[in-house]
Image (cartoon, rainbow, N blue to C red; front, side):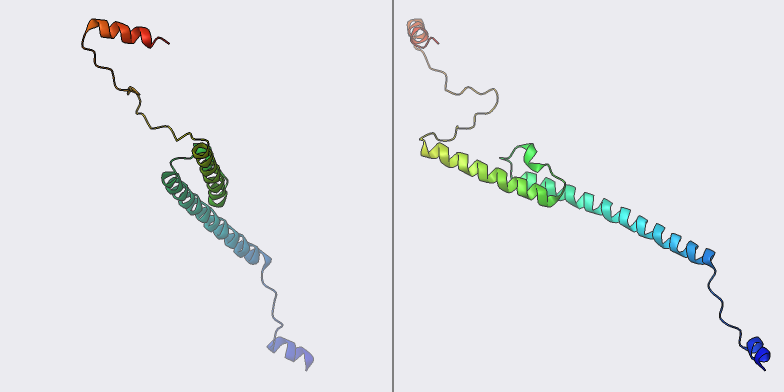
Length: 129
Protein backbone atom coordinates (compact mmCIF):
# COMPACT_ATOMS: atom_id res chain seq x y z
CA UNK A 1 0.00 0.00 0.00
CA UNK A 2 2.79 2.40 0.79
CA UNK A 3 4.48 1.82 -2.50
CA UNK A 4 1.27 2.42 -4.35
CA UNK A 5 0.71 5.71 -2.47
CA UNK A 6 4.17 7.01 -3.39
CA UNK A 7 3.64 6.35 -7.07
CA UNK A 8 0.31 8.18 -7.25
CA UNK A 9 1.45 11.19 -5.14
CA UNK A 10 5.06 11.88 -5.98
CA UNK A 11 6.92 14.25 -3.64
CA UNK A 12 7.46 17.72 -5.09
CA UNK A 13 10.90 18.07 -6.59
CA UNK A 14 13.24 20.98 -5.77
CA UNK A 15 13.57 23.70 -8.42
CA UNK A 16 16.45 23.37 -10.82
CA UNK A 17 19.42 25.39 -9.40
CA UNK A 18 20.48 26.45 -12.90
CA UNK A 19 17.09 28.05 -13.58
CA UNK A 20 17.17 29.83 -10.23
CA UNK A 21 20.70 31.12 -10.85
CA UNK A 22 19.74 32.35 -14.33
CA UNK A 23 16.71 34.17 -12.94
CA UNK A 24 18.72 35.82 -10.15
CA UNK A 25 21.45 36.86 -12.60
CA UNK A 26 18.85 38.43 -14.90
CA UNK A 27 17.25 40.33 -12.00
CA UNK A 28 20.69 41.60 -10.94
CA UNK A 29 21.48 42.77 -14.48
CA UNK A 30 18.11 44.56 -14.71
CA UNK A 31 18.74 46.28 -11.37
CA UNK A 32 22.22 47.41 -12.46
CA UNK A 33 20.79 48.84 -15.68
CA UNK A 34 18.10 50.72 -13.75
CA UNK A 35 20.71 52.04 -11.30
CA UNK A 36 22.93 53.31 -14.14
CA UNK A 37 19.96 55.10 -15.70
CA UNK A 38 19.01 56.67 -12.36
CA UNK A 39 22.59 57.86 -11.83
CA UNK A 40 22.65 59.44 -15.31
CA UNK A 41 19.34 61.21 -14.63
CA UNK A 42 20.64 62.45 -11.28
CA UNK A 43 23.82 63.79 -12.89
CA UNK A 44 21.80 65.65 -15.52
CA UNK A 45 19.47 67.19 -12.94
CA UNK A 46 22.44 68.17 -10.75
CA UNK A 47 24.14 69.90 -13.68
CA UNK A 48 21.01 71.92 -14.44
CA UNK A 49 20.49 72.81 -10.77
CA UNK A 50 24.09 73.99 -10.36
CA UNK A 51 23.85 76.07 -13.55
CA UNK A 52 20.70 77.73 -12.18
CA UNK A 53 22.45 78.43 -8.87
CA UNK A 54 25.41 79.94 -10.74
CA UNK A 55 23.10 82.22 -12.73
CA UNK A 56 21.30 83.32 -9.56
CA UNK A 57 24.56 84.18 -7.74
CA UNK A 58 26.85 86.00 -10.19
CA UNK A 59 28.88 87.70 -7.43
CA UNK A 60 30.40 84.39 -6.33
CA UNK A 61 33.58 82.89 -7.81
CA UNK A 62 33.47 79.61 -9.76
CA UNK A 63 34.96 77.73 -6.80
CA UNK A 64 31.70 78.31 -4.88
CA UNK A 65 29.94 76.01 -7.34
CA UNK A 66 32.19 73.00 -6.84
CA UNK A 67 31.02 70.03 -4.80
CA UNK A 68 30.05 66.38 -4.88
CA UNK A 69 26.32 67.09 -4.73
CA UNK A 70 23.79 69.88 -5.06
CA UNK A 71 23.61 70.06 -1.26
CA UNK A 72 27.39 70.60 -1.05
CA UNK A 73 27.18 73.35 -3.69
CA UNK A 74 24.32 75.00 -1.79
CA UNK A 75 26.44 74.97 1.39
CA UNK A 76 29.34 76.57 -0.53
CA UNK A 77 27.01 79.23 -1.91
CA UNK A 78 25.61 80.02 1.54
CA UNK A 79 29.14 80.40 2.91
CA UNK A 80 30.21 82.51 -0.08
CA UNK A 81 27.21 84.82 0.23
CA UNK A 82 27.85 85.16 3.96
CA UNK A 83 31.44 86.24 3.27
CA UNK A 84 30.32 88.58 0.50
CA UNK A 85 27.76 90.30 2.75
CA UNK A 86 30.33 90.55 5.57
CA UNK A 87 32.93 92.20 3.31
CA UNK A 88 30.31 94.51 1.83
CA UNK A 89 29.23 95.60 5.33
CA UNK A 90 32.86 96.10 6.38
CA UNK A 91 33.51 98.27 3.34
CA UNK A 92 30.44 100.41 4.09
CA UNK A 93 31.41 100.70 7.78
CA UNK A 94 34.94 101.80 6.95
CA UNK A 95 33.66 104.52 4.65
CA UNK A 96 34.68 102.73 1.50
CA UNK A 97 31.82 102.34 -0.88
CA UNK A 98 32.06 99.48 -3.36
CA UNK A 99 33.97 100.52 -6.45
CA UNK A 100 31.89 101.60 -9.39
CA UNK A 101 31.93 99.15 -12.25
CA UNK A 102 33.96 100.45 -15.18
CA UNK A 103 33.67 98.50 -18.42
CA UNK A 104 36.88 97.10 -19.90
CA UNK A 105 38.69 99.66 -22.01
CA UNK A 106 36.73 102.62 -20.66
CA UNK A 107 38.46 105.60 -19.12
CA UNK A 108 37.73 105.93 -15.38
CA UNK A 109 37.46 109.71 -15.65
CA UNK A 110 36.23 111.93 -18.44
CA UNK A 111 38.98 113.48 -20.49
CA UNK A 112 39.54 117.14 -19.67
CA UNK A 113 38.68 119.72 -22.30
CA UNK A 114 41.44 122.25 -23.03
CA UNK A 115 40.99 125.64 -24.58
CA UNK A 116 44.62 126.13 -25.50
CA UNK A 117 47.96 124.39 -25.67
CA UNK A 118 49.09 126.28 -22.53
CA UNK A 119 46.20 124.81 -20.50
CA UNK A 120 47.15 121.33 -21.70
CA UNK A 121 50.78 121.86 -20.58
CA UNK A 122 49.73 123.20 -17.17
CA UNK A 123 47.36 120.27 -16.65
CA UNK A 124 50.07 117.81 -17.59
CA UNK A 125 52.59 119.33 -15.20
CA UNK A 126 50.10 119.41 -12.31
CA UNK A 127 49.04 115.80 -12.76
CA UNK A 128 52.37 114.08 -13.18
CA UNK A 129 52.43 110.70 -11.52
